[in-house]
Image (tube, rainbow over all chains, first blue to last red; front, side, top):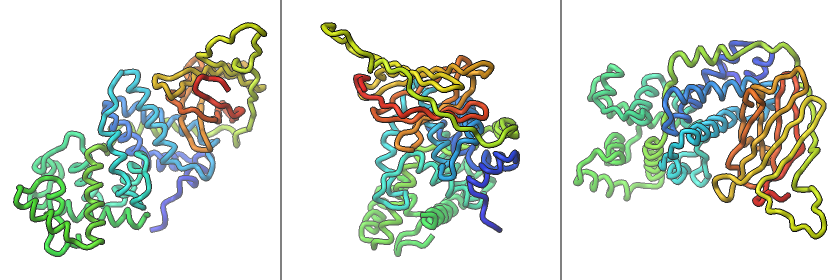
Length: 185
Length: 206
């Protein structure tokens, strides 16, 4: 299987009118943008609106993007800023957990001493999860990133997996994720 | 997962996630403390992952959102964007004050940028945080162009700070900006307008 097209390849193709290139960009980043908005404890409806705004901004900016544009950072910036605007309008409190998160970020990054911005962590993890097989990805998202924090029993039922296999599979999938991210570093 | 001698990977995760009883947890903690550097790095990674996951949400968007995002795409009708430059034509902070008149305390600063295609007015004001500033803008394009839905991009040191779409009236805002020099770009149809770099400083004086 060849390398997937780069973001720049897709941007150029979109400029040339390729709807399939646009679909690849959407598929590549919609989960990241949506999840960033949800990290602010916004509703799924608000997060969907923010995702639409982010991609509409991207579409209208296609002609001005440069080859060195980091599209994940571009979209993450829009998602973060728009989420904060929605929070400000709704007078919601910024979740304290977000502020404490940065203290824990460096150890996950390519170099433990590097400061990693929140959006970089999200993009980093999204890349790793996307590279996992579907079974591992669904399991880790359910166990570690689902805001409803389902129990092992609920996860087993949701995924159609024997309860006793959740623990061992979890460990195996996390190690796969760690190796994927280390290779990317 | 390659197990630390004496510590199964699953047991390690259970320890980090608080699923072990006190006796088991103490035993695993002791073995982890005695482990070699490679294992210590692996443990730190797993600690960071489990800790970060508590503060991060990764969710699948609603199924209908994907189709909505796809519908945003329209094949372009023109070629590459034409570049325009909007120059600073007015800055309230640089207006002369009559001799003998005490200058008023500056609470906001008005900037106007002009080019053939449009005019943009910016208002720089102190933000909610004492060390930050808000920039509110409005785009006035030449007829027959509409000010609605334009992309306004703010950068600093070539790093993207924010991207917003203008309202139906061409209004936009960038909030909670740290003091510094900023670059603004607007995309209007087949034009990309770049603005003179402007500085926002506390006290709004240049």
